[in-house]
Image 1 (cartoon, rainbow, N blue to C red):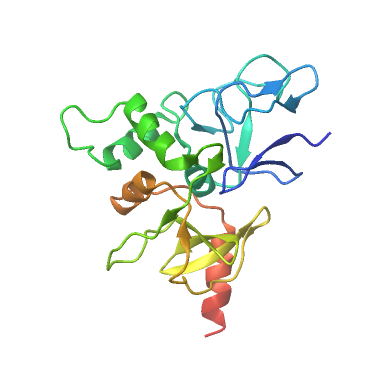
Image 2: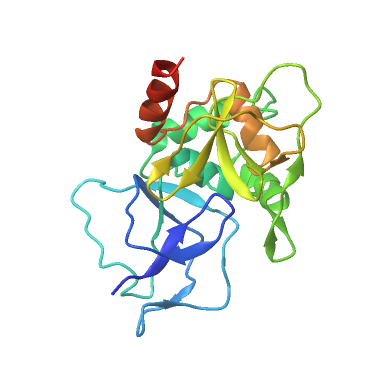
Length: 214
């Protein structure tokens, strides 16, 4: 049975046999009796990116009245959808993300709740995924940022754009001026400040093939 628990960069939760590098959750949004999603797509503003393997913990996916296990191609995809690293199972990554989050140099630095409040306002427009205008800046968007162009999510890498799919990333293309920003602006700022998300290995193949063709 293919469960509806894979998350796209636009935050949609779909059913596919493709597997990803990370799990995570948005609270309890499924019925354990049928292992299907409820109508709500979140019950908690803490949208997390979690490790697939942590200690000796094993979970039966969507089978209990616990958090709903969601899955992402990679961490950049999860950040685009509006999630952030979990302080419980990915403590080091979460601390790095907080240190790079806007206003991180304030006293005190932002709490998990502060970051969730900010991200929640940036990732949703009603029940739909919020997309933003591209920032007016001279420097390029940081690696790992997602943009929407031609109706397709693309990840920015090395100043170019790579189309996203569940199989990985496609060939590099130009970042268009009419693109919209998918990744929440605060997460983009964290990337700009040095946070390095885990990116699916297919990006290396896409970049290598492009360079080989030059």
